[in-house]
Amino acid sequence: MLRVVVLVALIGCSADDPVAENSPDAQVGQADRELPPQGHSPLKAWLADGHYKSWACEEAPHPARPPGAHGTNRICSNAVLSSSLGGEYPVGAASVKELWQNGRVTGFAVGRKTTDGWYWYEAYGDNVIADGVHRALCDNCHAGAPRDNVFTHVR
Image (cartoon, rainbow, N blue to C red; front, side, top):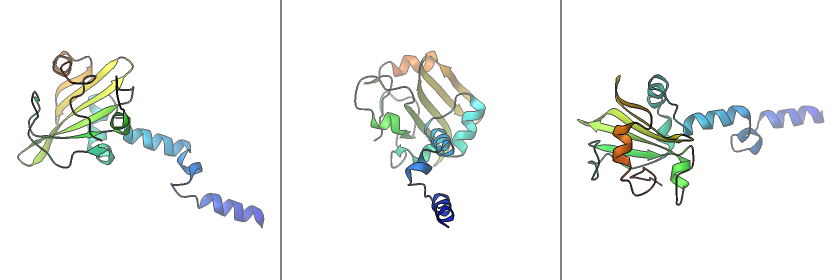
């Protein structure tokens, strides 16, 4: 009888339970939400699934801040970027910038810190502007950011 009660208790673990939180499935799911993949096809699907929307996000779209080149946008930062307090951002820091036009999202710009540097992605549907680490177009502009290639850090 005691074994049955223990088994039922384990089956009934909630997502707040440390055992459930540390399960391999929970860790993979959380990693999938917190770290955008690299490459147009997987990133396009990840963005369409809206994983970044659970991150720290600006409340509403706004005109680009100088020297911004992305037009009207809204930025979201993952927990790694959002919680970083100084110096270079750690590997795994990421942000997603929704690119707005005529009241709707028409594209995305993504930055992700990797061991090789910053991975940059910008696309409007299948029109890819940048997709890779050390894209000159992105590196040249982001080199002027106040901290480690990041202009806006959403908390």
